[in-house]
Length: 203
Image (cartoon, rainbow, N blue to C red; front, side, top):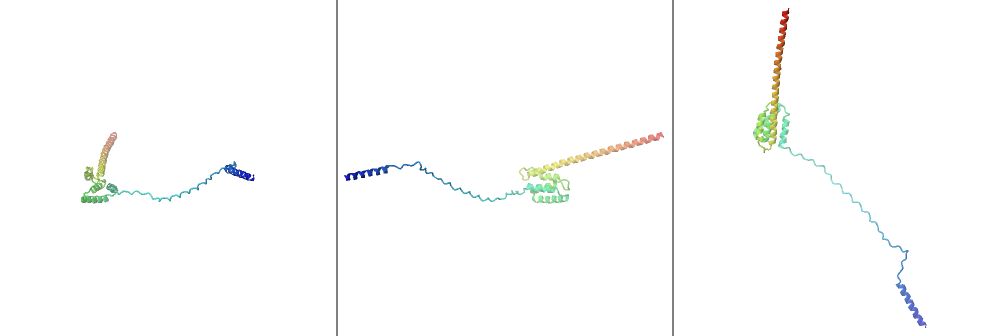
């Protein structure tokens, strides 16, 4: 009898243990959900400023060398300020240079010395004759300068002719005025003579 009770107790204990093992744990309402904590990223370090670039001074544009035309024009401007004696020396030097080289530059330079009016040795006709070969050659390097200089000389000749004509007109007017004054004086003299005779008759 006692053996049966012992077996029955053993079976009951085994069944309780099986029930306890199969019952899942019950979550309580008080258990809080786990929250993932995100750590902020460390601030990025500011990039170091780039070193200043070397500042180069502005380039100064180099003036190109003076052309042959510019040199001759500068010479012409200088010659126009010379006295008569100084210009005579320039003419002699330019003539010698042209006779030796016969270059276009020497030709134009001699023409310039001869084209300056109002000084001894000026000869615009010879200056035009010197420039004529260059004026008639469009392909020459100094064609344009020779053309302008020849036109300048022609203008000077026209102005000189006009001034000469005006001077002649003024001289003619002066002669006419003098003739009229002489006639007026003669008339006045005649009037005085007639007045004297009339007064003598009355006496």
